[in-house]
Length: 269
Ligand code: ARG
Image (cartoon, rainbow, N blue to C red; front, side):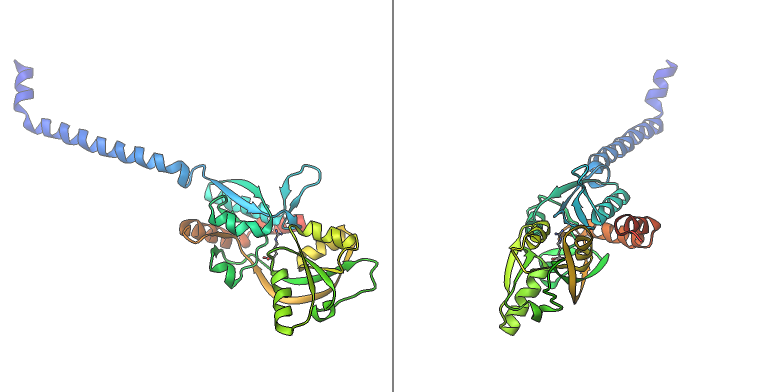
């Protein structure tokens, strides 16, 4: 008798119970929805990073392990960690990187890529993290000592296909009408090999990379063409959120001791 009176009578209590249940359902619903988004957005999202590993010290193959290593690789891994992402390195030729990004085969380009106006029409670049010029390499024993592009007229010069080195030579040829024979390779390692083998007269390549080849291979730098290039990471233009996150992480990282340690590891001294 008592119980029935309570259930029937206490309308207030009924309302409180119903409202509480409804609020709980809404909260649980929101929680489930948020949880479903979490893995792709921040949790364990995998960042597919495209790179052309023929470009020491930025990206190259570790001869002992066969793994891709270098400044760019350590850099993107550190940034991804800040973003809560995992990194998957995808190797491809340099001239395939922007198409692969646009086709969504990769999410980020980390490949010593110079920020240029033409490229920035297709992809979005982060703030710069490195500066470089172009260097002319010849065989170590060679008497040929080109100091600038004029000295390369009439010669065969190797570059990697789709690089700023190739564009620089093409612009020079168009502007001056002078003739330089450009030989474009899928990788800079192959270009340097062909120089060592005597199949080309010189290689034009970014200055920090030329210094590494000079140390490791039978080639030497004879001239620098000041181009003032800045390297950036690249993402799809519509990936604004990723770009903002990368930029924030990069700004912070460039002032860190961790960045100094990476440079020390790959550049020494
Ligand atoms: N900085 C030059 C460019 O953007 C060359 C980059 C080549 N990078 C590479 N990983 N092979 O064109």
